[in-house]
Image (cartoon, rainbow, N blue to C red; front, side, top):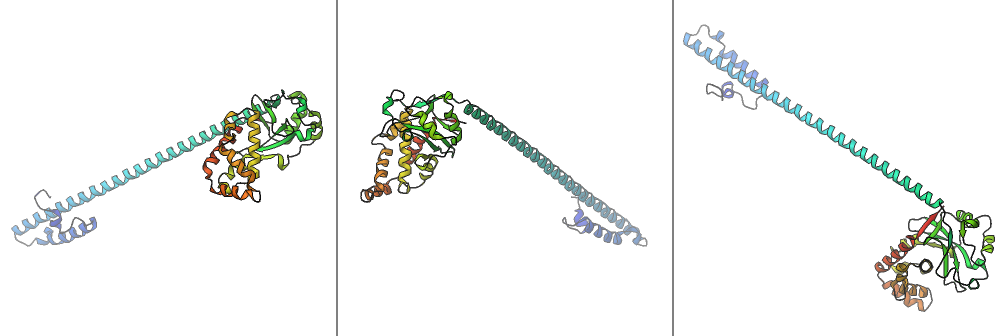
Length: 338
């Protein structure tokens, strides 16, 4: 409210929403009406009243002009403060983003350095070839006459693809004519796998690097390997990765021959390295033993019909978990060599 009790807006005939230009325009109109110069010929009392009214109009106009000026300055100040806050926010966000990017780069650099260090350490371990020997509880205690007279049917290079997709090569030697017991390349209770068939060929050709020559027919086996490594045939190729992939599907879709071959290999390795934790999953009456019995008759014309029906009714969860556990137990005992 104006100091003398009058409302300046009412006095000037404007509203609170009127702009400065509108107030100015209204002021000029009133000034034309109430300016004292227009009333020089009027009586003295009229001139006095006109002068007082003009003073009130000037004061009201000055007051409203000051109000609008302060409001304008307040808006400008608020705008500046808002822009300053937005700028500070952007700068803070930029700093935080830069910090995150820096931390991410540093983290990636540390991870890369850790991977490179692990790779160097792994390569160092793989190049530090241990002295391989035939690993099996019955070797070398088994009699030399117990091995096959034909070394080509006794010792075979085999390939194993692990769940990671890595393909490794090793040797398997059957210690009896029935090929129920097998010894493998081992050192310090680990199954030795080579990165390539050629690196394994070079390693076994250096007789001073291992203790493999004690088996019957070793020299004949070396002669049969020749000077160039060859990939093992399908009969001597095993794929844990394919097994793991197959476990995503119902048991009725699993390929019997694939599972039988890999199950037999797991049993042979477990017996050779005395992996009791794996052998218990293959024992008579175990889920894998029951599944193996079904697989061995599933492809037969008559008996296979019932086996296939039983496979179709199985819930794959338990069998999948046990298969993964058995494969994991083997992979824990793998040592890679270059």
